[in-house]
Length: 513
Image 1 (cartoon, one colour):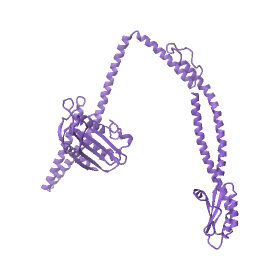
Image 2: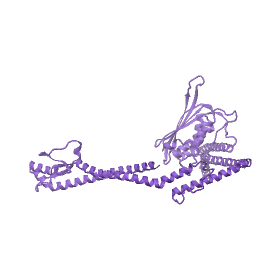
Image 3: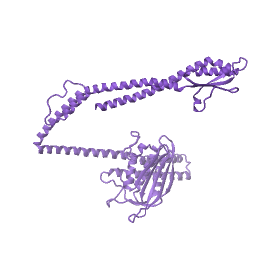
Image 4: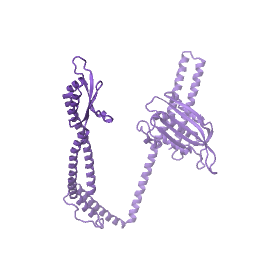
């Protein structure tokens, strides 16, 4: 343990030392480089006017002397002058290092003419000199850190062994005592020590004493085993009854949450339709009172009231079916018999019941229905799944948006399997796609889990997709999947066979969690 502790401690110090050396090297380099630039600039400012006079008078010898004077500085590697008229003085540097050179503009010293630029002085800082200075400084620091770590190793090992190593060895020896629980030692393990190690030793010794007393009680209980078993059995029965009651309460809570979630859409649509009828009757009453009601207006309002009444009948009928499903879920979760129905007809009928809700929004439905076939199954399950998908797209898919499009597609697919045992069969595919915010990758695998929602406490119970998944996989004997990309939308895909199997030869219906 001491070796591991020292290894981790020194490793941490070494890492911190490396980081410190790196930071120090960077700071030292920046400081040395800045100092070299300041020295060079100060020296250049002192020779700037001689440079300008030498270039102005085309005095090559004086210019070269000034260049050699700058190059004599320890931090300067090379100096050259470039002029547009008289050429270059010194040896210019080419390649990538040219961009590292300091550049200063020389101007005409004439007091008559304008101060025009007559050339540029380039000064290349000697990085090798700066590097040698930094390496020398850092080398001393590294050597000091190494010596410090060695001394720290010796000190830490001695302190760890004195404060922790020996006490832990005594504790391990105590726990290794033969028949420790049956016959624990009476002497105190670490008398007088009140730190964490002392508390640990005292706690271990107290625990051993408690186990010793428990063992004695167990030995006493063995003399009256039948009574003990009877008492424990009675206690287990009570616990079992409590667990059953708790499970029933949990199921009831899930049932109530599911009812409130599922009844929201049909009751809301019915209320909207009832409001429409109320508006139409108010309009007719006003027209009658004003004696301005025309036959055409009367026929239009009668047609509108008839269509709306049909919607109310369908939505309330769906609510009635849902209530029937949940009311008898404890005995039989089946509410509809299997029957033949046209798939696209059920889709259109379901979407018609959603029109009062959709009309109050700016969301559009794009229908591409190519599944005009009759199948054996449960139309109520199909309607419930489709309603949940459209509602989910509006509520969650386009969260934060006021407009959007929901694409509903149906088609019939041929499925062929290999071997004589598998026959040619067909499946219906239903796709519901939105182009909204999408689902993050971390939430995509949890979409079909019961009570999973990112809007908990904001009107969402997290049951919608779980109910859809169970209806598709159990009632319709199909499969359901989801594909989504953040910012590009979400697509739910459902595949169901043309005939859902009967279960147990009894009346079969929609499965509801």
